[in-house]
Image (cartoon, rainbow over all chains, first blue to last red; front, side, top):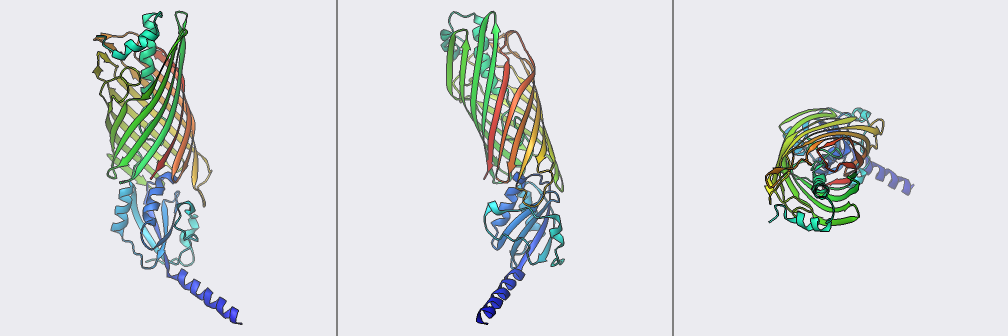
Length: 125
Length: 301
């Protein structure tokens, strides 16, 4: 019984942590290859509170999983991608984060499938 | 004083051979170093207009091995040139990138039974590339970037370098999608005189087509692309001048085809290509290249 309660508490805490995460789906034009997108991903990962970054080259979308305190603005993202040599278009913020990997390791970056942008928790800002 | 100082050094080693044979081997073994355009690039043997991010450093280490041989007046001539070229690219601003190129070369020359070798730094190059036009779409971009630079005589005059300060410039266009990339470059090299020797000016047009062979579709866990590469390079060289006199055995036209493969990841790109002359129409007794093997790895920091 005791272990069951502990398990449920742990599960609840985990659920709370995931719910506190947010995901930004950032539309960026002009990125065409893994080598090209790498510098942008690295710049995003350096931002405090960002857990994971992924990309879909076909749709020109970069996914950022971060703490809920992390807030991006159009001006900030426009400048970031301008410095990287690409064109920022827009972003969408959703609660929760479906990027499983929260490691701060470059090697763990993963492309996210197209349908990710329509996950059940998605909500427009 | 002989106008081309180190020519004397090598000339002594080749004593007994005809003047035309000796001279063409020496001068053309140096000319081989400029048959391949300099610079960091997504293609194998030409440049790209794709960006170097502001504050980002890209390092490319390229190995180029060129073999040239023929028989002239019953005498065999052979030049093997091995070059390790270090290219450093830095994004000064999102549009302006600076590049430095430093080659280390080894040249083995054989004429008849006599041989000579030179090893050392080649002539370094510095150039800037500025993006003047960009059109970005999802997974697609088109860019135009002119470039200009200078080649400085860091090599040994007449042996691993030609002693002069030369200038070059041109225009690069790149049309890239996630499936394929097309780079084109028009380049003009204005070569100046040093110690009585002036290499002829060089005009080149290069185009490179890179097609993604793998994966067939970009999907989850796609971390790398394999490209098949096909490049075409047309080069026209003016006559060299020695002590103000035009050398009839210099200059001419060459057309190269370079098939190759490239593996591109998020952090590094490796490539391998073979540069084959389709048209070798150099003037007089000029020694013509048989092939070049090019391989490189580039890393972004």
